[in-house]
Length: 313
Image 1 (cartoon, one colour):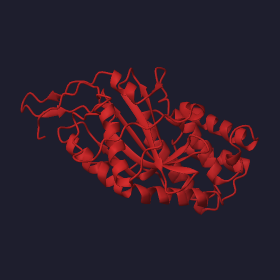
Image 2 (cartoon, one colour):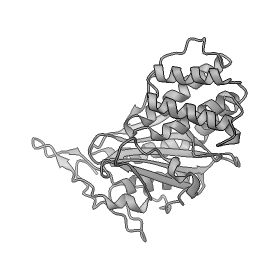
Image 3 (tube, helix red, strand yellow):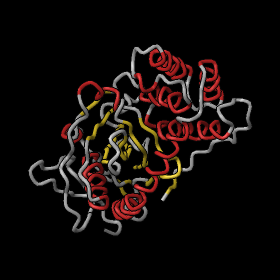
Image 4 (cartoon, one colour):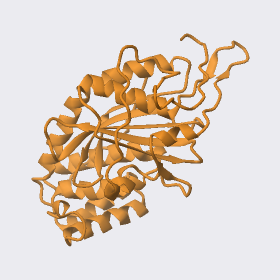
């Protein structure tokens, strides 16, 4: 690929699913999975916190023009190499399906800034667990505001909430070498995805054994707010989610007043996280919650500072 710019037209032929920018070799192209059921679809992927944000299907990702690659005048080398959203999603889905030897269960997307920002999530089976699924979150942009980023995580089937592994994220800028390197790193991440999901699942189970009274949850939400992990608006939404669950008005499974249910209330609120901050907020919530679990649920503990470490590759 060298320094030659790829100039995609922004669409994938739905019948052939051709990739014009990325080369995934002999990996079979896997067609998009179904949307989540209508009840949870609108909360499955964040609405990006923008007035013009909206959910969309995989097919609709191709409705937005991909910008032209740009070159440095001094050298003629590529300075900006765009990646069509649909290709990003297709390569991610196909590589993970091949490595995991499984078909995706659902996938969903949201766009903002008239299609210049994208956030998506693809969910695969996690072992034989009927409660949870292995998820891959991805985000990108056409206005260079967000690099091509991928994070591994875990989803629950009780609701649309999920958790992202702050230790399993990577980011690639839109450079000439991006098409080759992103495929390499997707394969590496897919190879480690099951281990990462297993760790997150065990963590959730452990958090479920830590009791959390109402006041403790309010303190927990306050810590997240004070540490800058969530905004005042997200804090209010998390508290409303917690109260609705504990009163039996939403998800009864999340009303048992445990640290795991507290975490679900926070991640439920994080569906409104903007894409620039979504990975940091999900990763930060995981970090703070894990620290609290080691104190037995007490807020009177020394919580290390959280630093998002998305590996720039």
